[in-house]
Length: 403
Ligand SMILES: Nc1nc2c(c(=O)[nH]1)N[C@H]1C(S)=C(S)[C@@H](COP(=O)(O)O)O[C@H]1N2
Ligand SMILES: [Mo]
Image (cartoon, rainbow, N blue to C red; front, side, top):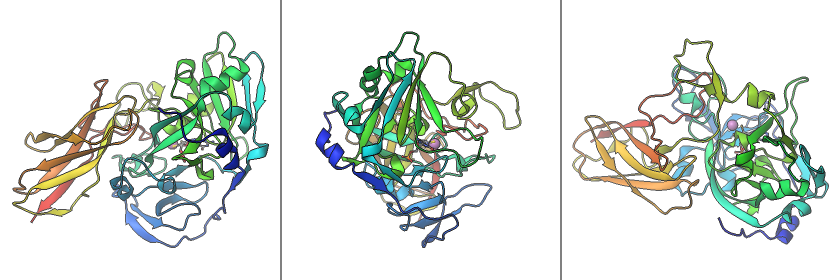
């Protein structure tokens, strides 16, 4: 973490407001189709540069927007450019926000409730930056077999950015956390599309809220947060799935007990113990911290490689809730080769890996990369199937044909 480049002045100067021309429902965006390789269902999606404010992205849904990054984005480097970061809104998003009018209400179990302007947020404490992976809990869900319900994402519902803001604990201190505080809940400016549907609000336990790296952020890769990513402020919880990273932050509420709201108590949950797809009644726990994952980005399934030649494979990996410890190339007949790791951008960032196979002697069937983190978590061989396809981290495998 460093001090962050955005000063209070640039925050405010850059934050006159943000607006987006909303593509209308049903609008056709020019582009071509890309195959996400999803088993058991339609696998083709439009890949288009035409979505307002975005580079070339896979359109899963126009409104509310669900945009996925093509895997080619992750060949470029560990930082995902703002215009290639995936986008996910559960409900309709406001298409313009005026910075001068924006307030963040801090209330609930606090000593004195406050309503803070952006200026007051920016001066709540030291400016901090953290490089962290923003990953949807449903990332890779579309690869589940048997199929599950929900957005059929490939593996592009993730990205890594440098987030800048103030510590959440410094913002909480403006109101003073009362005795007995158990959780902190966040709400954004977005509201449900249908009457009676639950608002998208999420909460985290107090000990996580007080972490030094949990931010109320306004900066994304040294630019103001784009509207799609939550202008003017969002929560950042490094190492946790980004369902908790509430965008367009408008309310911070300190709770003294459990959170019984829909998106914590009922949704975004996984079986407490492994289940089979036919099981119905099982205990669940909230998805929280991320497990390790690794991806081959230099090659795709079915690619042809040169027989008799060395082969360099490359990609990215993440440790999840803790720093990456190692990445191994694994395959059939006991193939296991340690990969070398690229520059370390911090425990919550992507890290590049590389490995050289000295000589390709035949097809490389079902090869994959397996990441482990410093807490000892290792990617599993087989999918921990769950009805919502959450927290996928099975080793992703491809086959390369030698010619
Ligand atoms: N206000 C608000 N914040 C939100 C959401 C939302 O629907 N509304 N979706 C969450 C989910 S499920 C994800 S995966 C991330 C996506 O962040 P991104 O669109 O910046 O990539 O935002 C989170 N924060
Ligand atoms: Mo998500």
